[in-house]
Image 1: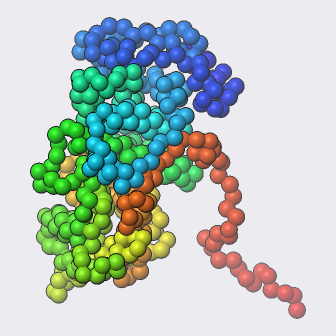
Image 2: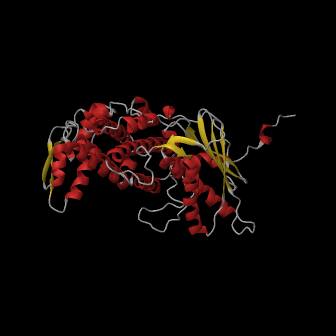
Image 3: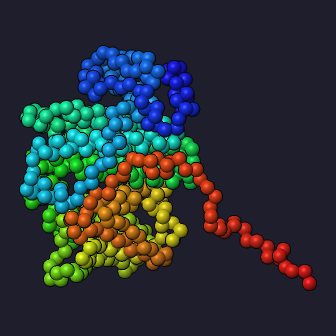
Length: 472
């Protein structure tokens, strides 16, 4: 431990680049690690200095030793496998490419060959960026747990790098591994959110650190959305997981997604929660305007679960604001109005409420992970209000919209209400994944120090103008 700290300090003094120091790290291969994880024994790995460090596991103590091992790996510069795969940029796919592959060229072997390279690349890009976060945040138990999940999943995927798709057991094992990895990452969002809360409670709010955390979490959660999209397409197409309620879906994509139907589903789900908590809810009014084919309902090639997630979050916020503002009103609650429009380039969904609106000063805060109007819940708590949470609903909904080149925007009039607009690409050929890439530009974003504002800020106290009167 002393040797590792000594060499670590020397390495940091010689270079601030993670890549240059990473060359010194010798890491065991994934097969060796996974064999060790399955049975008691010892594992030797080399530190920067080249001296072996031994990790032992006794029966019943594997979990703690695993966490200590991952803690060791996380404290050191990036392992060489992660550093290698992070040199490659992710390959963004369009919804049309997902659809064409699922409809005409669905081949389990082809999917295997693509994912066994693409998934480690996306994981490695994310893992490199995680290590640029402030040490005080990285040391939070919840963040360390998330890091261990990513490392474990990365190493499991590396097992398939030198295996061919001609062997049927390989394809089945790969499918099982993807399902296991997906399940392992189910709680990444609330666990990372808990880590941010732990950090904020202990170290307070710093605008510069908050900006870096905002930048990172946008990219981190976008990467997670893309990671799950790839896994879901593979498991749904080749794992026999087809949803009998949606037999025409291609994986998770609906070639003829009826937007109004998804709007109604999301509204009904939010309404059920609202009535459980507030004993009432606003009604829904929905209109459509199809500029391309006026007589037809609006349909789009899209992922219904993504659209549902966005709409549900917006309905939930609108209902909460409306009910709390108009509580006890004899006339009932004003309805929530939804307008769905389709043009040549954009499909838009506008949700309008009369919930009192939000001051312009606070609009940006609603998309900030370090800010929430609701009380902070606990991962173990079962008493949290159903219409509130970590405050991540809006920012993550915006990431879902942006993932396929769309967006989510809020337009609010304080004292009246809020219009929330979801923008999606009307053409599936233009709906390409928007993916974060770890490169020098991303690295520099975390290194820039805060500078003085180059715009005037209003002072807390007005100046006494009498001081500046000219002498007569």
